[in-house]
Amino acid sequence: MKKENTIALFHQKTVRRHWDEEKEIWYFSIIDVIEILTDSPRPRKYWSALKTKLKQEGSELSQKLGQLKMLKL
Image 1 (cartoon, rainbow, N blue to C red):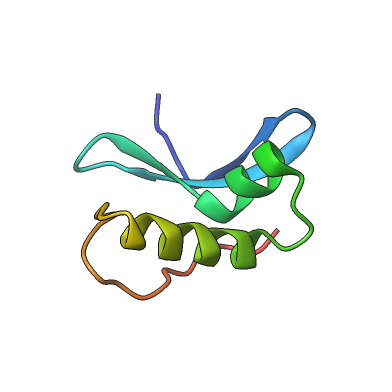
Image 2: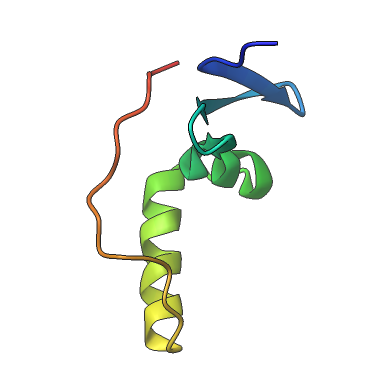
């Protein structure tokens, strides 16, 4: 079965995702997940504030990368 870039449903809301064939791993849009789990009207702002708080607590999320593009819903 071939995997592809598709949109998944979770609690009747869409989540953008991408299948990396080489690594055999799914990547999901964190903004879509945050919107669903928090019911935030501004999930990008929520994610930005969360990253700031985590950094202040000494957590490291990942390498410093810019935002990656995903297909818009």
